[in-house]
Length: 148
Image 1 (cartoon, rainbow, N blue to C red):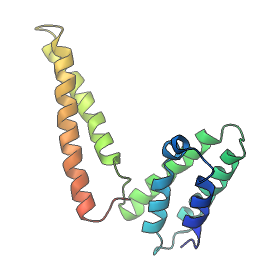
Image 2 (image 1 turned 180 degrees about the vertical axis):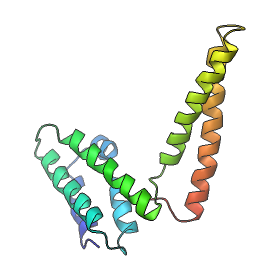
Image 3 (image 1 turned 180 degrees about the horizontal axis):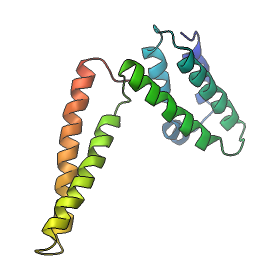
């Protein structure tokens, strides 16, 4: 798909601090490019090249590039999920924790009628259940080879 993409991104990344590399999820971008190397998709290639260009602009301290990078990376991840069913490590757990939080608030609100302290209990229960479900689903996807 994109020859030398990984080495180009790694070269750019070595000029960033560790905190910025983690914030930009550069490791995930590299892993994704390795995963997609065997496929041909013009839209994905365009987005990945755009991300590499934005990384260079961030390195040159151009303003507002972090926000643009995150938006483009989210677009790329959506397309990859739709086209190939590949997920970023941790994203399935995050999604299910969020859903658990929503249901936990609902459970806590119904329990809060008996005592206000039960609101926190409901939230905690929801997060634990969401985390457990997300972890199980992420392990299934990992076993299927659908994580990057």
